Length: 264
Image (cartoon, rainbow, N blue to C red; front, side, top):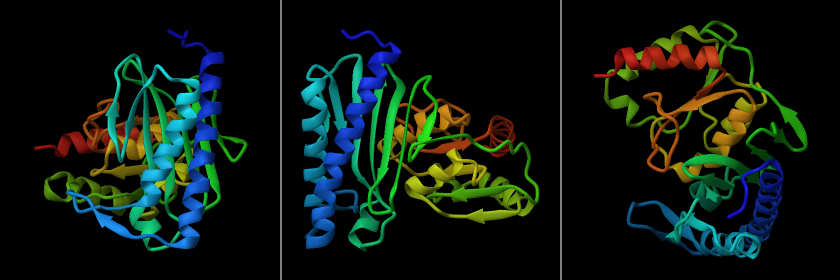
C-alpha cells in the first residue's frame, strides 16, 4: 500500500486534475451537440454525458491507482480498501441540462475515512480549484484563503444551497436571525459559493440537503483555505453527510452554536 506522504498526495492530485480534464472533453462535446435526458429513481436528471464523463474519470484514475476503490454518482461503489475515490462527473446536472454554466466535476480522494485531496473543475464557467492535505488551497493557480469574518454584521456575506430540510424545524428561525444581522445574502449554490468562500469573497456557506459526492473535494479545498467544515450538527464530513456548514473558524463556531441552540 502506498505511503500517504506529500509526494503521494501530489501525484494523486495531479492524476485527479488529469481525470477532470478528461471528463471536461466529454462534457463539452455533449454541451455543444445535445443529449437526451432521463429521470432517475430519485427524480433527478441524468444524461449520457454524466455516464461517459464518469467512465472517463475512472479510466484515468485506474491507470495510476488500479488497487483503489471507487464511488461514483452514476455507478455506485466499486471495491474496498484504504483509498476511496469519490466522483461526481457532473454536479449540477439540472444546470447542465438547462445549458447554463453552473455545473462542475467533483473528484476527491478519501483515505481511511479522511478526505485528503480534491479537484473542483467547472469547465463551462471557467474555474478550477484544488487542494491536498497540507498543501494549501488553489484556485486557477493562485493560492486562496478564507476571510477573517468572525461575527454577523453589515460586512458579512452568506450563501445558501438547498435548505429545504432546514426550513422544517426551529433552525429555520436561527437562520433567519443570521440573515437579519448580516450585510449580504445570496444563493450562489453548487460549486460556486464554495469557490467564493475559499477565496474570501463570501463568509459562510449553509446547505441542508446534499450528497457527500457533491462536496467531497470542496471540503479539502476549504480546509486548506483555512475554513472549518462540518455538517449542521458539527460533525466532520463523511460518506453519510447530507449537510454542510463552512466558514472561517470564529464565524463557523458562532453559526454552529446558534443552530445547536435551536435544534429540537
